[in-house]
Length: 449
Ligand code: F0G
Image (cartoon, rainbow, N blue to C red):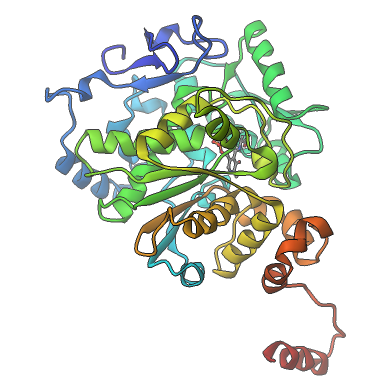
């Protein structure tokens, strides 16, 4: 395997063999993260995949009955040769997610091409599955008995499911009372050892980094570089779904900042191999109360990140000290994207608008649409530009938030003051009526007006 790929530190550029990666997956010199690199791709040599042949092969595989061919991650396996044997693949048929038009939002924003890549349509309801299939397969190949993660919910659900499929025990560290019930229920149902702790996500990460130094558990947080290899395949799918044209803009919510990094890696690699002619501008949007990247870019030009105490109802991205921030800064700068932040009311409104398209998503996934509105207002996204938003999680992940918004119980008066008409437009309350046809007809009449 050492000939096929190597691991390069994103801080000091030191290269190590895959077998040298262990513990908390950080560089022993500079404490930064590693990324997977394929040296054979940088020259015209024989190891460099042929773009035309690859496009054909990936399309053909969709007709195959083999699980590895049907998976929207392993279908692209020439781009992630990280396993010694494909027999080690652990798949739940992830990926191959839809790219939807958003006609109502496009009309409101006067955009000619607005689409949403719905990663919530994965087996456990979030984009984490595309990375988890890759990293769990590596864990299985390496003979891991236990895998572990700290999580705001989705990673834990995904890891628990894939570990169960692989026959590996899993342990998740969760901030107590800070994750949605749906996600907690998933981790429990899939059989993880589910530990809730009286701290935040960043505190869970700290505890877990000590645990992996003291016990033989394989770390599956996104510091694990193989997670990003799986997650980058969404970029290939988007390009394929657009007939190998790339959009002008890709807009991603930012939490621990792995997904923006992975998508950027995917698009940059496609261009490097001649699969596509250019890369989209990749912009990262954060919640105002959990905005360490926005501050790092605005206050320190992306050179330094100061941790923040994170507050947002979009619990998936309630993260103050993101692990992959350097990788995300690189992607934003390399692709010419931006960072932006959005308020709690803006997130809730955007989520309701995505719902009204017949699609729906969890709160953190609505952040890109809220951010897009600002980028359009600022003239950074033009009306003729093509835009793809990444929807990271399924609508049913956090029903409590949805119900509270539509019942008018989610936002404080202060939060909603500036956007009251927008909130009124996007709220759809459920009405209790008498069990009679008259009362139904009365409500129909009222709704028609
Ligand atoms: N959207 C959803 C639904 C998420 O679950 C997450 C992260 C993000 C966006 C942010 O992605 O971290 O790659 O920038 N959830 C993690 C978890 C942290 O533990 O489930 P990111």
